Amino acid sequence: MAKQASKLKGYDNVFAQRLRTLMKERGVTQDILAEKAGCSRQSISQYMDGTSVPNVDKLLSIAEYFGVSTDYFLGLSDTPTNDKDLQFVCDYLGLTEKTVELLRASQQKAKIEKLIEIMEVSE
Image 1 (tube, rainbow, N blue to C red):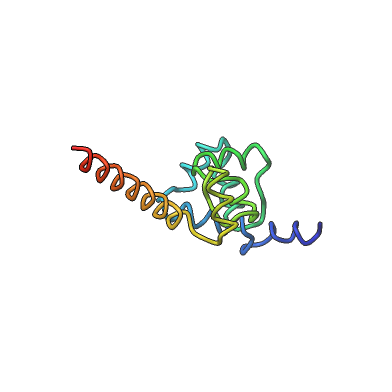
Image 2 (image 1 turned 90 degrees about the vertical axis):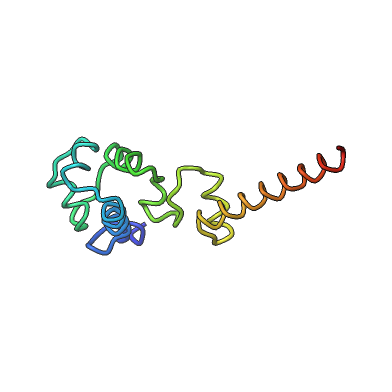
């Protein structure tokens, strides 16, 4: 259990790293996130530098705002999606969300091409 707790402490903890990355990628300021999560800008700053971690309610609010799973924020999954099926496939196969979506799109394209072929033959 102590091993799990250490993952949530310090600047390099998984939550702080992923929070900083998402905020940077999406151009979200501490003030904006604080307003959306219902906490102070100072709390967000502490989450970002790893000196504090959010309670369950704040964690859920932050995850919902970014559209990612709490498992992703806690380091239980490397796949950010809220879609549990997609998250399982990605984690199980070691693929990214984008790769799985491309495979899914490719499969859909193949089905459409097959349908067009059938329709052309029946004309």
